[in-house]
Image 1: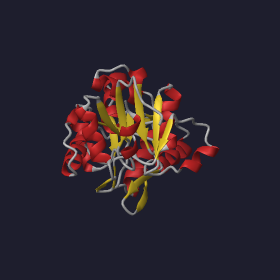
Image 2: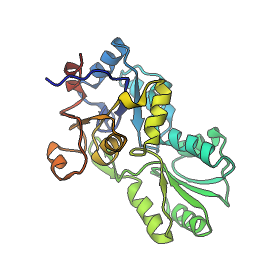
Image 3: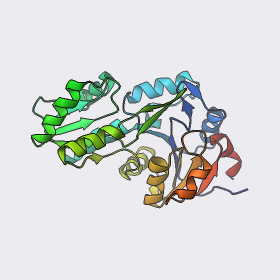
Image 4: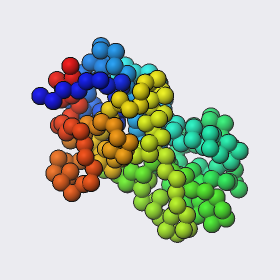
Length: 259
């Protein structure tokens, strides 16, 4: 049995890795309990920007995970931090759910009808008017920033359309290249390491997606664990340029790999 040692902490995906929709994946709660018991730092990384950080804390605790806000880092949190640091005086036009817009307001970033940035999130309330307004803002010179690149969002019954197709739509229609902050951007690793106060080079990423979770780990040269409880199947690796460190059926298999 392959053993995992010398790990500073775990970055753990949520959708398809810890739960699907409203149901925990078998063994997930036991895995998180083991990390707590062994005092191994962990942070959940989710690209889903349709809901707030507090929503994920409540959702996870409602499933019995018993975690705190510092255990969750969303692509929204990461993107807002990036904007405040990189474009501190810029205003935004947010395309997202009410929860997302409220997070933007709470961050202190100014929302404007003549924005410097069109901020694109996973918007389950998207309308033609939102799309058209964002389009004209970008044509008028606004930068395009997106919280994450995912094409699909896992649900209990399958997958829903996520943000990726809209990023490509705006890029194609306006000739603008989006800045995408969530996984696989290495900024997520930097922020996760900061949250846990650990060595980023000894982190391990656990997730179910090749093009976000595994790509981020591969590009950043850190270890990864691909779980086959979500989107990716083992056979998908054959045609991928990404090398993963370990492949398991689910997070339930990880405890026996640890010394």
